[in-house]
Image (tube, rainbow, N blue to C red; front, side, top):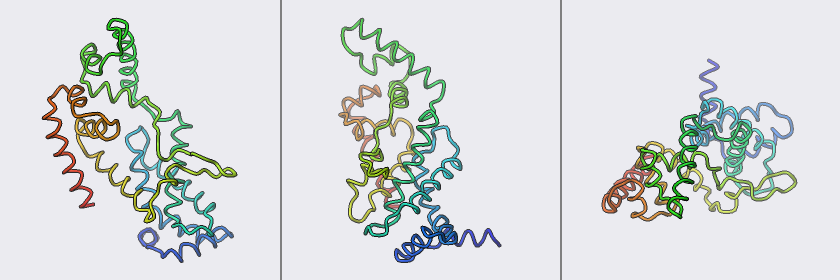
Length: 253
C-alpha cells in the first residue's frame, strides 16, 4: 500500500504555484512538503543521473547524491526569483554529483584504459623526437597496433572535462553556473541536452566517435577519415545516417 502511494507521489505533477507554496513550507520546517517535493522530482534526478552513467559508479549511488543536490535546491531556492524550480534544481543536482565524482578521485577510469594512455604518452613522445613534430593519431595507433579510436578515447578519458555546468562565479557561497548564463527563456534546452546525451549513448562506439570529433572537437570530415582509416566519402555517408538516427530518436522521445 505504501509503495503504491509512493508511486503516485512520484508521478504527480504539481503546478508552479503549488511547488512554490511547498518550498516556502519546507523552508519553514514542514517535513511533509519537503518529502513531496523530493518524491515529485525523482524523475528529474534520474534524468540528470543518466548523463553520468558508465563511469564506474552504481546508478543508485549517483541517484542518492543527486537527491542531496535536490534537497539543497529546495533549501536554497529564492522564491523572489521568477524562475521555475526545476531550472534552478538541475544545475544544483549536477553540481552535487560532479563534486562527488571530483572528491572520489574524479572520474574512475579502468586500469586498462589508464595503461593504454600511459603507452600512448610514451609513444607520442618517442615519435615526436623521431619525426620532429607531434605525431598524428593514426601514427600513434600504428605504432601501438591499436585502432585510432582507442587512442582518442584513452586520451579523452583522462582529460579533465570542461563543462557548461562548471561554476563561473560565486555569490556569498552560492554558485552561478555557466549554464545559468546561456539558458533560454523556456528552459527546455537543458532537457534537450539530457535527451541528446541518452541518444548518443545508444550509438555504436565508432558512430559516437564520429559525432564527438565532428561536432564537439570541430574536426573536418577529412580529419575524421584519417583517424578512422576510411575515406572522406564514407565519413560523409556515415554522418548523414547518424544524424538521421539522432533526429528520429529525439523526435520519438
